[in-house]
Length: 113
Length: 114
Image 1 (cartoon, each protein chain N blue to C red):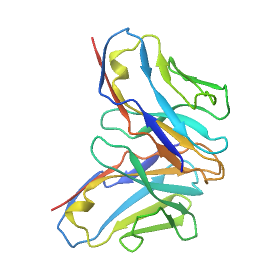
Image 2 (image 1 turned 30 degrees about the vertical axis):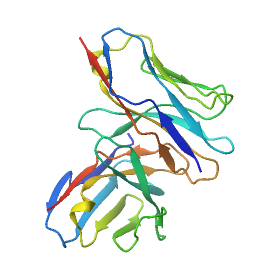
Image 3 (image 1 turned 180 degrees about the vertical axis):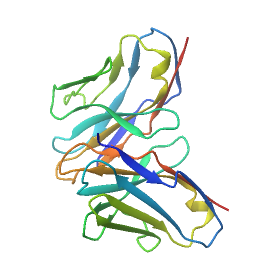
């Protein structure tokens, strides 16, 4: 079945450092891929998404490119801020799955000033 | 726009009692709502998919008689944990979607069963 694997956390970075959170997936067909962010005490928010191969999703300085050849959707940001501290979830929605999301295990990011 | 609320945000109950959690889409009509369960430091696991006016579709391994889901209107879905036990303690999260639009998540409900 479909699955998502993302790098384990916690990840601790200094402010203005470069961020990469790896995400790989297993799916048949052409799933849509998502990154969600969960700030402390809040619900999940959609950060960015890509619906087909080679698409790049971007938002708030974060980017991720849908790479079908490597089945990956790594999240990157060139310069993180303290306010980016949160848990990040990679997720996919498979073909003809009625919108059901399958999540990775989440990666906690802590950015220190 | 696209706000989803959950109530209560936190509930403690005694073992053997039932607890109802509400999920509301505040500014849009949700044709589909999803219920997830999240254990500490772990990912979200989909429990069931609920379409307005029809029976919920449960994921494999989820007891439909224990986790009763009702989606009576386009803005409200409820999850009732029946005869709750300590192992049901968890963080329950709903999401709502209009058509094939993006899912919007509620803030979650923390259930503690004593």
